[in-house]
Structure formats: C-alpha cells, structure tokens
Length: 215
Image 1 (tube, rainbow, N blue to C red):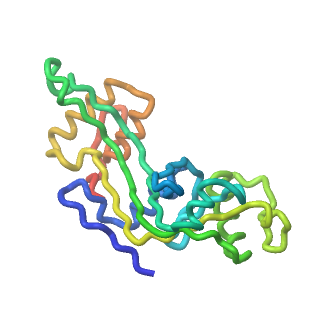
Image 2 (image 1 turned 90 degrees about the horizontal axis):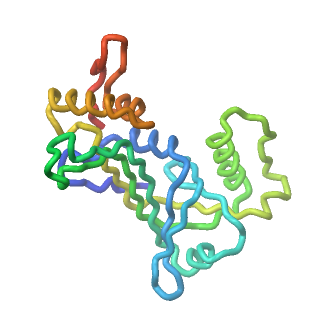
C-alpha cells in the first residue's frame, strides 16, 4: 500500500513518518468524518489505534457512521493536540493579534472498510486494548470468541496523510529560549510537557536546550 505524504509548504510540515506514527500512537481521541445520506459531513470522536499503516476503530454494529461508510467509504480522519496557548502579551500587551498556539495535528484522507476477517478483527481489538490499557489486567481476545460478532471494527486505509506542527521550530534559537522561559513562568498544566516537546529540559539551573525541534 502506498500512502501519499502531502507536501505542505513551509517549515510547519511534519516530514518524519516515524514522528507521525509516534504521535498517532500517543493520542487517545481522533475524529472520523463520513458523508451522510444528505451529503453532509458527519464528524464523530473515536478511540483508535494505528496499526500496519491503517487506523482501526471499534464501533456498535449499527449506526449512522456505519450506514455512511457502506454508502460512500471515502472518509477523513483527524487527530490534534493543543500544546500551549501563547497569550498576546508574550509579544505586546497592546496587540491582541499576536496571540498564538503551539500544536500538533495529523490529517488523513482515505477509505473506510468494515473488517470481516476474524484474525484482523482480533488484531485490531487487541491493539486497542494494548494502547488504552497498557498495564494489562485482561485476557487477550481470541479469534474464536463470540464477542467478535457483537462489535464492528472500522479500518481506514490512508490515501493521503499529512501533519503540521508548531513547537518553536519556526523561530530562531534565541527567541525560542525566550519563549520557553515565558511558558515556564506562565506555568500552565501542560507547560513542562510542552517544553519537553520543544526540546527543553527543566533543571535546577533552569532551562536547558537538549534537542532541536525538527520533525
């Protein structure tokens, strides 16, 4: 299977497929968009797992999204994470237009199928369990179990996949350090994780840049 990695203009494009895979494996909620019978997009948040270059989701065996996919299997799938809102006063207390956001987002355009093969269905459901319950405490699903008949598994095969990110790679190193200091001082709930993604480590001596945020 060939996936087209859409070439975005500029430094905001995620060029590393490995980074895209890592991000998809970290996030817990994605949004799948299908087309309803009246031609409107229907967008639903879903748990998912990314396995073998495809998105797998579990679902009730009946429902609008199932009907949509049977009628037209072209779908969109999106995952994003807001890392940090950057208030305008970081730059200028008199200019609200300077407010910004650090983020990561992945968009997929592809085709959705209902998985009927029991081995593949088992693989997907066990993949979901491993992702959402990594501590274990359950018996793996077997392909012979009757429970497989009571759940639908949706598979999205990407035709086009692209990612964007803004984590400070778009500004010079000295300005990035200044921004990191402001984020640390603002001390939001996500500040330390954001700084780590930006390539900084918080030490007793203050902020240390340990990695270039180039994906």
